[in-house]
Amino acid sequence: MTAALLAYLPLLEPLPGIERIWMLLLLPLAFGISMVYKAMRVTNLDRYWRSVGVMTVQIVLAMTGLAVLLTLLVQVVVPMLPAE
Amino acid sequence: MSEATSNPTRTTLNIGAAMLAWVVPGAGYAMLGDVRRGVLAGAGVLGLFLAGILIGGVDVVDRTEDSLWFAAQAGTGPIAWVADFANTELVKAGRVGELIEVPSGDPRIPAQPEVSSLKGVARPNEFGTLYGAMAGLMNVAVILDVLTRRREGRP
Image (cartoon, rainbow over all chains, first blue to last red; front, side, top):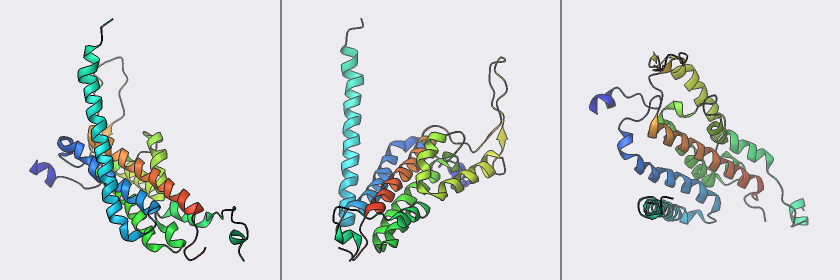
């Protein structure tokens, strides 16, 4: 891991070690989307960062909920269905 | 009296500001007099785009191999073409890293072109590409908002 970091060329090659924590990449993605969306929608920019935080949490919770539902569907419901 | 105030149902389109919003993300708002909003929107779009390249390498922007993804990434403006140019000239041309042969494992399949040792695969490539595409699509939403938004200080 240390050797990979030393040889790492930022912006030219993939970030080393990201495969193990790829699910956490949802957090900055949701934050970035919220930043742009709220910059468009918020009338009073004094409440901007609070709105961004709320929307980021909403996105993460919604995606987590969808993941749980799909996991239940695939792991529990589908195996209960008759084969033919 | 401007046209917008004489006819309240008619919306004035800010075509110049919308074009600027594509060239420099966030600059459209600044042109309409809302600099702070422009800085926030631009930071979000460019932050997403650069984060994508940081995660997956510059290979995540590829106009020839991932043309549909590039169509979404192009919403960020000329920076998408700059990233594609850097990918083509530095990574795919082998100026950075090295070009390696791709073993086919099947003699009936013709030899594949050499690929860069820096080519991104799997999750980093997927997420990097997605980040860039989301940056482009969000900037398209910003451009549409700039197109129909009233200028600061106007009724």
